[in-house]
Amino acid sequence: MKPTKLTYGILIVIGLIAIGLIVSSLFKSIDKDVAATHTTASSEKKAHPNYPEVQVVTEKAHDKVYSMEIDYPQFQSKKLNKKMNAFVKMAKEDFLHNVEENKQQLKSQEARLAIRSDMQKFSDHIYSVAIHEKSCLHEKQCQDLSDIVIVDSKNNNYINQTEILQDTEQNRGTLFQLLKHAFEQSDKYSEHFSSKKLSEWVYDKDNNFSNMYLADESIVFQFDNNKVIDKEAEITIPFSKMQDVLTDEWKDMIRHESTEGSDNTENSKSTVNKENTRDNDSTENNKSTEDKQEDSTIKQEEKNSNSPSVNQEKHPSSNQKRVALTFDDGPHPQNTPKVLDLLKQYNAKATFFMLGNKVTANATVVKRMKDEGHELGNHTWDHKDLTKLGVAGIRREIEQTNEAIRNAAGKNPTLFRPPYGATNGNIEKIVGLPSILWTVDTRDWESLDPVAILNEVKSHTTDGSILLMHDIHTSTVNGLKSVLDYLVGEGYEFVTVSEIIKT
Ligand code: NI
Image: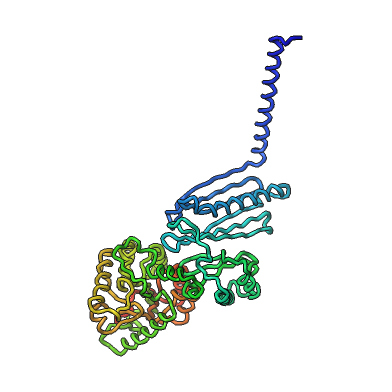
């Protein structure tokens, strides 16, 4: 039989029905999947709160059995995002694979994946990103994993930790001693610590110190659970103690950064001399010079009743004990406002000894100090040792700074504090402002440790004390609340230096 038009027609109809059935069954199966998992997901991109030039991606997703919350930064360059993106992608895939395999046993949103990232800016183009993953199938079945990426956004590449640490046998030995000491001194970790595991980690020939990142004037080592102790650990070692183990390139870089600060980029007048060390450079030599200078100046001031000096006797008009908090080397764009917030909260007045070269870029912060009743002090233009300058040089250091503060706050500074405590009668005559040292050195620049700062305050503060701190250090800001709490508890009132020295 020859095929007729009718049979063709029938075949076409049958074909169409078949296609229809296939398509509809496909849709149904997709429908079913959606109904079964009900995944809700969102993704959001926002500027980083401290570093607006970097974006932070926040992804959230959950269904009946799991939830995910993921946070990670994105730089402008695709190349610089590669490592972080790969870490996040792998973590997600592993997690979802695990969930899929254990779907039957999982109760409502019991499985969790959390990825968070902490970012620290070391200089205007170098960032450390610590990514931390915690994934749990059940409450008690969790896994931690972390990674550190150091990014150089100017040169568009990554920095390996081994470019920062000079990896020699001797340096590993030094590093072992530093970390051992830090673990043993730590309230949090000392009882879990065994030096055997640390030694195994330090001397492992495959160790490339990829758990190390650059933070605020320190280097941080982040240890995963069970790496060295039976929990996660984070050990911070100040740059000053790491000098010996750094490569030459990074020794220079760190000296440069800590001298210049990262906040005076807008300041074209700034003529910071790289060779110049500062009190917060915290080299051993520097420290002892400052100590000696400090002692001799205090003695000198005690002898000389004509020169303005610290009066430690009780103020006659008040029975309350008083203390003057002083903050040096700022203003700092992020840390100083935090100090001001805390002072406000405690209704505390303080005194800020500022570097002229940081004032203009942070003029609003300086204005705020004045508006909130704090005292403004001159700490020279760029932290020079004035005993090494001639008359014209001293004048320039002081007058430029007075002018910058006056322009920012509408008011001249009322006090002067010599860098390194280094001064003499001649300098004081030229400066023309009361020279103020301190009676309690919290050594905050050296320890970079809130607990150590509080301990210094506890063991040395008396009525009429002048406390020395530095508002440029994040660790000082972090420790300030406990210092304020302690002093309030001891019955102190917080006043400006001029209040304390008034007779
Ligand atoms: Ni200083």
